[in-house]
Amino acid sequence: MILDVPTSLGPGRLTVSSAEAPRAVLWLGHGAGGGIGAADLTALAEVLPGRGITVARYEQPWRVAGKRIAARPATLDVAWRETAARVAELADGLPIIVGGRSAGARVACRTAGEIRAAGVVCLAFPLHPPGRPEVSRLDELLTPTVPVLVLQGDRDTFGTAADVTTDTAGRDNIRVVEVAGADHGMKVLKASPLTAGDVAALVTASVANFITGPLA
Image 1 (cartoon, rainbow, N blue to C red):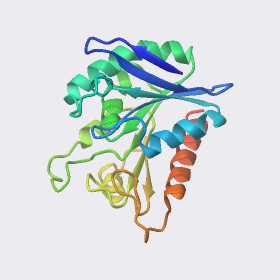
Image 2: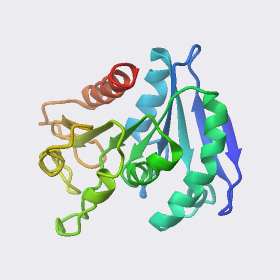
Image 3: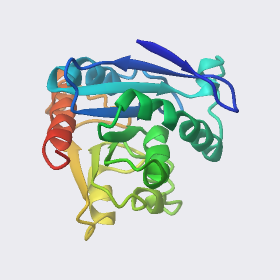
């Protein structure tokens, strides 16, 4: 199901993969360099409805308009906030877990409190720009007070799983799952310990267990 959602910045779009008897809704945003067809977002949309979780992937207005350059972070937050009411209608009282990959994960973290999300799922959280660890976005990752799941590759140039684990030490609400051999796009090398299929299975199982376990 595809839903066009008007915002003050132009129409955004929700692509909804519905569970037959949903227990929760997972609302996901895409990254700055790609759309909702990213491998991890697609895997979640294909697998989680079978686990009782409706998945709504959101395309920001800049992406719907066919632009190649992402809007500024504050602008991304505006469209996301203005879409929250439509997602709440879709959820119809069910818990809403927000998240996304890269820039989408940042949006979800920054707005989780005001949207009253039950949890946050971060796929490849961009802890810092590549090669610039001094420009940290840790404050955004630490913003949510609800449970947070971070799936991070150990080859991610925006911050490895080890980096995220170290920087979030002491925060009991944040769980980091390392994706061995994966880069920022969750892609692996032929010599990596996990195949692309293994990565998809790890991502979907981790997110499903996070939603049906700690957040149940």
